[in-house]
Length: 154
Image 1 (cartoon, rainbow, N blue to C red):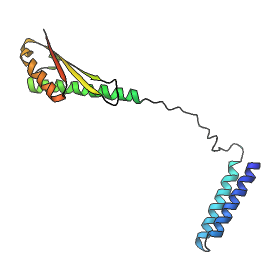
Image 2 (spheres, rainbow, N blue to C red; image 1 turned 45 degrees about the horizontal axis):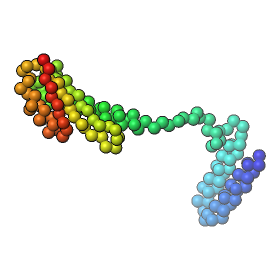
Image 3 (cartoon, rainbow, N blue to C red; image 1 turned 120 degrees about the horizontal axis):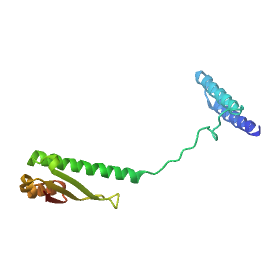
Image 4 (cartoon, rainbow, N blue to C red; image 1 turned 90 degrees about the vertical axis):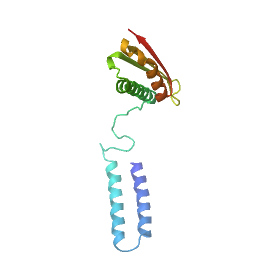
């Protein structure tokens, strides 16, 4: 009850100062309305069952830092995009089908601020694709500025 009277005393002092400063005329009635609404809000806040600012009635939620997991997901998605680009380039440029090629991109993600594409490893199948090994290796190395290893398996 003491806090209610303290609040009303402070509110009346502020409203009185605002009304003294306010010029006569149309604006004064809006200042009076604002003061009346503030007083009504003060009274309502002390009614039983009302929600106060200190107890909003909501459950508390904790925020987790998932930036490392998000960075790892971005890295994996980027490596998948690089692998897809190699598949597409091999098919369009050299006629190597997806079933004859296996691509694995490797990145150094020990420092999440400086991620580096280390290598692109390709495994090529089929005797007809053996002649394309060196040119595929050079193309991928030049395009992605990293080491490319192309191995041939039968």
